[in-house]
Amino acid sequence: MKAKIIGIIDNRTIKAISETLKPHKRYGKFITSTKKFIVETNNAVVKIGQEIEITSSKPYSKRKTWIIK
Image (cartoon, rainbow, N blue to C red; front, top):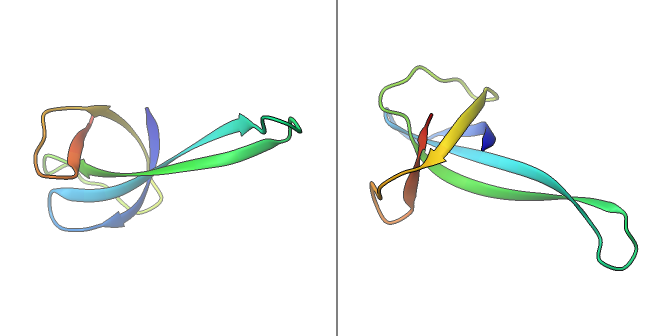
């Protein structure tokens, strides 16, 4: 899944956002749907605004279950 980095929490944790376009059920107009993820970086060098590929993994904490691919 592709995501964009919106925040760096600490050395190994970032916050990323994924956007998808979905048609409205009744009117058919496309709406942008967003979802935020807490991601483990494994000490990778990343910057805010960078596009990354994430994949699900074992739980690192209560909300952190994604990792950079």
